[in-house]
Length: 141
Length: 144
Image (cartoon, rainbow over all chains, first blue to last red; front, side, top):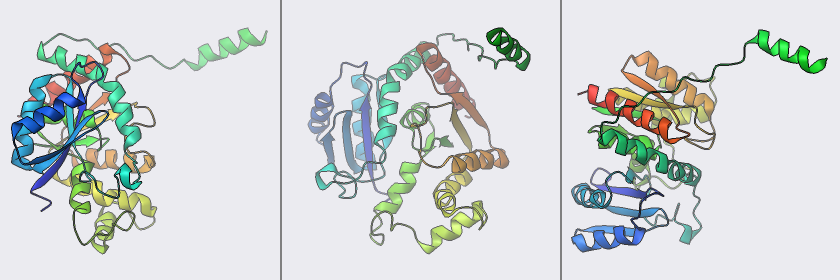
């Protein structure tokens, strides 16, 4: 059973104009044997791996660079996680942080699609001890 | 190819690995197999005697049980991996919160396995995000 079905989180970047409702309606319209649940960040879908793959391909077409996905450990509505059953949500901080970061990452994905040249900025160096001592001397005068 | 991601629950890394044509090895996938098993009750009663043995393969008995428990899940993923992507300098709430020692041991284990890996920085602005995605894309395309 575990090998056959898969639960996926569909997360829409904050910079996308696609809404969770659009994603949910699209999945319903595909006529696949999968469960879909609309969420604040996008949607969750669950079903056989083949059907989930087909749904993902269709969902990505809505906004290829701004729709992200990952598998979810717990099934949809699992009483150990579902809020309706007062389940705990230990993964929420991670999801919130990554959702915020997606507005940057989608720019990176778009740039990669365009094969845009990028150059890495040099890392800020640590203050040398000699300079720190000079600053201490200057301040303590 | 199978690519292990650090943090192993990252949406961004999982998506990018899949987007560029590889199979991400994630914590969610490993947990999925555990939680849908009807023999297992519910967290935290989700550990089996077999998991304890697995954990001991990656960390000695003197290592705290929390680290061994985490490594029992993460370790087999690193064993399967053909490559790895490590994200560094992320804010504290990014990734699996709670055990930095496990993070360190996993990074050590990746290096010890001598599989190809890349270290990227958590992006704080658009330019850094472009650099991060470009690096990951180049690395993953180079694995083919």
